[in-house]
Length: 204
Image (cartoon, rainbow, N blue to C red; front, side, top):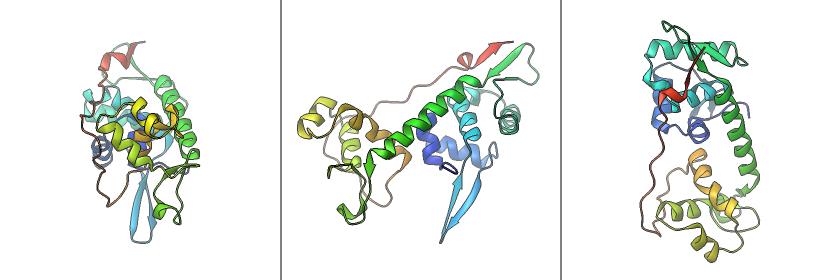
């Protein structure tokens, strides 16, 4: 990919989409823009995804100025593994772990796209699992409404656990536009985990 949308960044890093947009609007990171007709898209680099991964793991607790310096340092030196924290003695930010996690999730994103097809002549282009007519958003909604993997596989035996598991991530990375959510199952979605800043900071 030549760049990643804010939605894809949120899916890869686990950061809420609103937090990704806030990081952009606060100029912590500066994506490039790409125009397609009347639509302007903001695209992020892999280094900016690494920075957002750090945000998801607790970097947001640091002052804005420090965070901006870290983001700029990662962009300038994409292979760096550690960065010192400004005005902090013997404290460094671990970059390598965040980078490896982002790279792993990006590979997963590519693999996920290979398992899904979207054809204008099939269900009006609704993304479906390859070899089936089962919409990805249907499975994601079923999980969100409380269905278990076993229940979904019982109803759709052509799927497998991996396909069921990727449905929510796919819909987060490639959100549908202008379509109401299917409400076939009742239940509550689980909240996302938060990571304390101590997991991010290491003594030099």
